[in-house]
Image 1: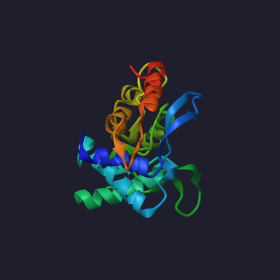
Image 2: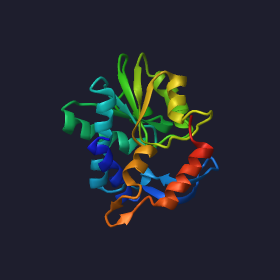
Image 3: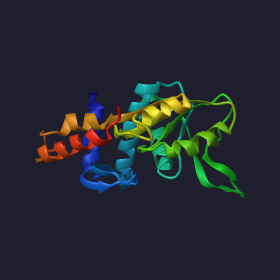
Image 4: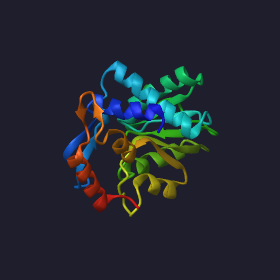
Length: 224
């Protein structure tokens, strides 16, 4: 596993973004882990988060894109932080773009924030996490309506590795339905590999009980 991925896993734990216990998801599933990207709130946290996303996007898509699209609302700060980090790390200016939940009819009118999208643009979508693909269902037609563009792929922070609407993961379903790639900075398998029964800052984040709960969750909801 790449070093930045190990650091990102520890970063999620440090920021209390990735938690272990018992959580009820929107789907109704009882999950032994939960990720809340809304807890990245400080300047230094967002700076580091942007760097991790930038590194993962560069690994997956190189420099072969023009626009980073972050769906409202959580995708807005993600796209801004990551375009800044991308410029700093790789010396390429990527434009950021996001959508409004409701179109604005005065001033900076329209459905988009940030850069306009032009014919020929190559776009990477950035999100925190996806479990059902609903956000992409809303985002895809908005991007397609802007012109003759190419969506290179999607990047999320964590692949939960559980079933979406079928027996496959949400990321696999997105690939099949929309025809573009979908990746994550890390997967839950990476998280378990890095944290299980290994001391981190004087504690065991994933002990035997949590590991058993995770295994049991995947027996029921794991993607095939």
